[in-house]
Amino acid sequence: MKIFIGVIFCLISTHTFSQKVAINFKIENEKSIVDYLDEKKLVYNLDDIAILKDIKVFSDYGNTERLVVPEAYFFNKEGFLLKNKNKGVGCGASIKNITKILKSKFDTNQQIKNWLKDYQILGTKDSLSDEYDIYVLINWAIFLNSNNETSFKWYTSLKNNKELKIKVILINLDVQEIWNLTDGQKEFLGV
Image (tube, rainbow, N blue to C red):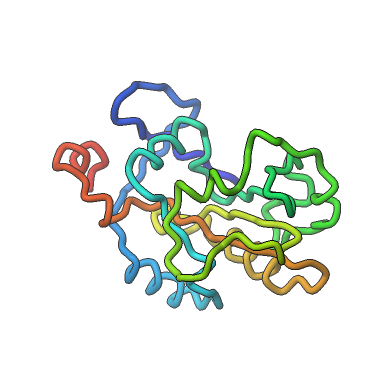
C-alpha cells in the first residue's frame, strides 16, 4: 500500500491534498538515519543513502505528490525517467521484471542528474556512472516506519540482481537537522 503524505508541506502556498495523514515528524540526522537502518538490519552502503537537500525540496515533493512511501522511480542508462506506470512494481518482496521496466518509454524532460540536485548523498562516491544499466530511486522515511519494509525489500532485491548493473539510492524523506529550520518552520511541522 502506498501512502501519500498529505500534510500541508508547502510553507508558502496553500494546497489541499486528496488525503491527509497525521504525521508526527521528528528532526533526523545522519546518525539517526544510520542507526535506524542498522536497527532494521538492512545491508546497505552509505553511497546508496540520500536525504532531501532542504525544506524547499521537501515542500516541492509535497506539492508534486512525490512524498510517497513506498515508491520507486526508474531511470535508463542515459538517465531519463522511465514511464513504466509501476509495471513490475508492487507492494511485494521484490521488484520484478526489471528488463521489462527498461523497455518502457522514457521522458527526456526528466533526467536523473536534475533529480540528484535535490539530494545529499551520505556517502562519498559519485552516483552517476556509465557503468549502470538502470538507476532506481526508492523513497522511505523513519516517520513512516511501517511502510519502509517494502522499500527495503525492493532495495535488497535490486542490489542482489545479477542480470543488470543497477544503481539504487534510498531517498530518505524525513525532516533533517541540517536544514536549519526556523522556529516558525519547526512549529508548522510540529517538531
